[in-house]
Length: 476
Image 1 (tube, helix red, strand yellow):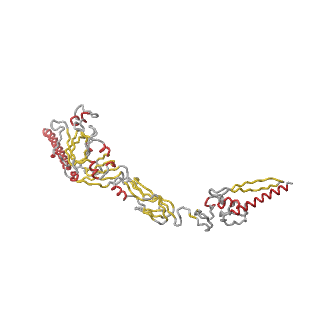
Image 2 (image 1 turned 180 degrees about the horizontal axis):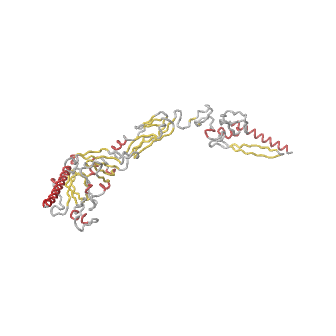
Image 3 (image 1 turned 45 degrees about the vertical axis):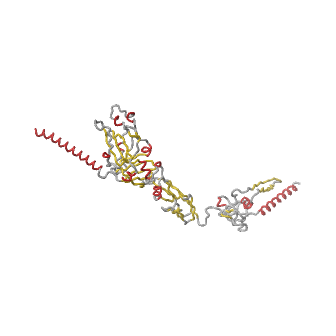
């Protein structure tokens, strides 16, 4: 029994010793990691838009950062314990790094910070507004108020008294220490160079926005890269907006990318995607070379897509292209030859579908032959009839409006009778329904001359006078 009683405390002591050794080993391993490769030797600045690739803008070595001039700043933080942490640091303001890198600080929207201990992506990120545009502070009195029983977490005026605005920096070395109530170094800051440590290089340090928010964990250690996301996005323009070419011809559309950074404009320009809405009318290669393959209209598009989300459009421009036949004028009317050639008047514009008469073909205008086409002078027809001795004498009087009578299809309709054969040609020899045995005549293309119209009108007028005279004598 005595052996068992002695064994129990002995086993417990051994277990405690093993636990302490393991903890010491873990601490030593952590300290070894901090001094064996996690600290960064260079700081890379990359730039890009949302959804685009990030391209290297600038790489700083330790010596280059030191050459820029190190600022010495004290920062205060609240960690997760929670406890107050103070850090005396030497580094370069983030705004200075952006300026030296040639990045317009007003174009920045967000920062992403990558660290050597996190291989799965960025460790932390901040908006430019939160990190640079918001005033942040070092609270020198926070350490003396935070542990007091009457500390007001929401509004402790004594804690924020004497607040010092501090910049956001990437530090080359610092002396970070967690402070707790104690009789010795409570709230003391070691400003000696011997206290400076570079094993957390490059550490991101920024001030506090209030005396209670815990942000110590976001003061990233071992930062090796910063991705700077610019606001807005690129724009694409083309040298032309409309392209009209004959079938078989080619043209290179030149696209220009505009971005806040020349580096981005150049790189995005290499990743543009060209497409045609109808390859049977026009095809385009990845350099913007367009080849017209058929007649008709087509849209040529040049676009840039989100590299992380396929199909998400970030910027685009389009050109309307038209394929024209080799004998086509692109829809423009052709000038009529001078007077004396093909019977056309000098200066007259004849539509390309005209047969030389200056009149609209019935089929092409979707109307019956003889129907008036376009804004031409009208011909008014009135009939006067009088019944005498059981007979009706119907006299037709034509009232002609002024105008170019050679373009009056209505005249032709009256003389033709308004009938149509299978080919759309006018039967000018019959006013009543055409007999089954009738043979269609060919289309009459010659215009009705003014002379014929006047003679015909005169004959009808004389017939009308003769009829009235005969009526008068018959009534006696």
